[in-house]
Amino acid sequence: MALLEQQQIQDGLARLEGWEWDPESNEIRRTVAMPSFMSGINLVTSVAHVAEQADHHPDMDIRFNRITFHQTTHAAGGVTQQDLDMASRIDELVSDAAPTR
Image 1 (cartoon, rainbow, N blue to C red):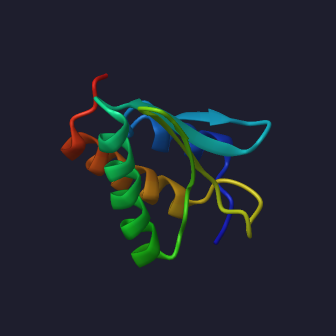
Image 2 (image 1 turned 90 degrees about the vertical axis):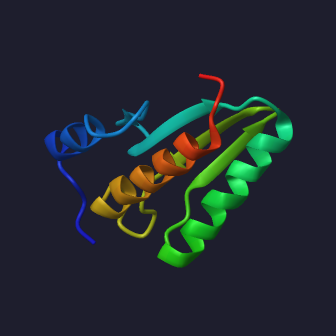
């Protein structure tokens, strides 16, 4: 999978909810605050199932009810279309899970 150029990443992020690009780590990420610890864990579980089906796995940091999703294609060394696609799927799952903000 080909790495995306900076403009392609920015264009992709414009269609996503709350994601940002970190050029230093060459990843996109989003932090979501959920109503409770268990609702956050349920969201992580839902994302894990989708990631397994896609064979493309985000890094996920859990801090009580705050979940940060880090998306990059390690094998390619940066952000690819697969990352934007997975971010879109994560957005759908977050929307269905009703975060606090």
